[in-house]
Image 1: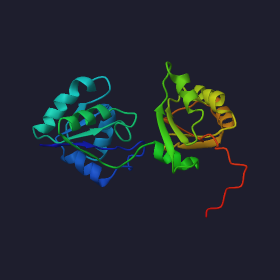
Image 2: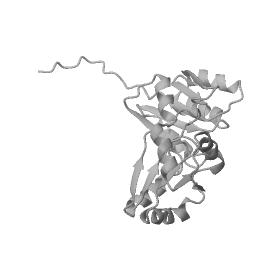
Image 3: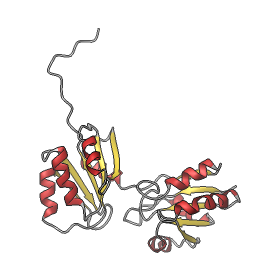
Image 4: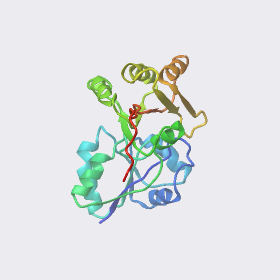
Length: 235
């Protein structure tokens, strides 16, 4: 029996890949890529000649069982996404679940994912946080924002540059314009930007410019109410 390897790839800077990831990508029989054209750039950079095949959200439902059967027959297969760790707001969950249900061994390598540097760069508490990924674009979006209005943990969102201003406007409405927020874009790339301030300040900043690149929004949790009474001393 072979094995399915989940292999993180750089979110921008091509140097942000591990030696082990490069070795695995060279050794496996097949690499499944979200977009073969995008992944070909990375593979060429590291002289990886392994065969590529497309695996994305539009075809994964009809191919996962066949892929698992290939691995059961002895092939070692690696799954990569365009950037970061597969299954984190990218294809990968369905294949992983199918392989595990069919008795296929799955191994996920540690590596790049965009929300970790964005969270650390924000300066907000990172001991406890909730990752929300992409908010619903239309149906269910307002309901989700209402649910999160009372969340006290740091919240992390992915967003399109085309919807960033709208998202910040909605944050002002549901969380308050004075709530602190940090927006990271183009992480690890030449024009990386981490802009912090209140929702109102960050909104004004991005309203005044053309926004490009992948976006991670880190939002401060709702401040917890402090007790006015003196805490009882422990006996």
